[in-house]
Length: 193
Image (cartoon, rainbow, N blue to C red; front, side, top):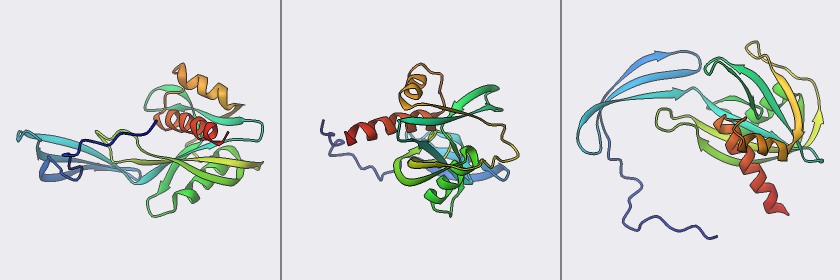
């Protein structure tokens, strides 16, 4: 299937929003929140809240030679529920995203990978945050020791990639980066066959 082109008269660089003022409201080591006074695309006055992340979001789909992957389980404070996700974390904005991915995989799973393929760039919730995420496929795995952070109480689950995809499709995996990463990994791998 060949992608179609957007409408010829569309100027994707045109911003119909006008920012009147911007005021910082909150920040911590991970996020900044600001409130902008704006004119919306129809000219009406309003406000827009923006959450800016101080790190890039990094996700990794590790894959061994038998077609297995690893999920990381942890209780997510913001959701008040337990979640299964691909190994992931944050990488400082100025640091190479691959370097951050290698560190996150080692810290959370103890795995080292010989081959890395960046398979996705995404925005996690672009109506409220400017967070940019990257997902890598990690192959040629060797096992080392985990190095979890103080805030992490992690459990690892090694399972076939096909089963992880089933968990996405049955809504047992709901994290946006995990859903996108696993589905993209499946598509990338299918394209190699």
